[in-house]
Length: 154
Image 1 (cartoon, helix red, strand yellow):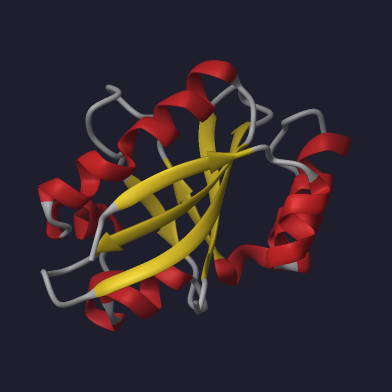
Image 2 (spheres, rainbow, N blue to C red):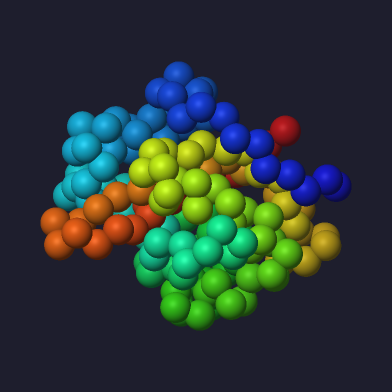
């Protein structure tokens, strides 16, 4: 199957079509002015927390993997138990495919919403999913990315 990424406007309407969670997360991001708000905690089990990307050609380090996140279900329990090693366990071709959106969200300080079709672990593990990347800043001034992903079933 064809691997692709397709960006779409991160609007409440686009997100609501896919998931009320995505729309709620965008609302939290908007009302907190891009700050890492305590209101994200309610959704932590479905999220990834990522470091800022170091470059546009590779995905960033994963800091936290939510227990009910798409990534944990797609890559497995053992993978999710070691977030600092999780990135290196992903195929480099997959990391390069999805990297530019992390970079765009970080550089523009704006949410990125996209639909992705990709082989996650191997050639026979094709998935289509959408994700919302929210650039946030902590009270200490540390930049991170909050990522919500939901598999689509076409």
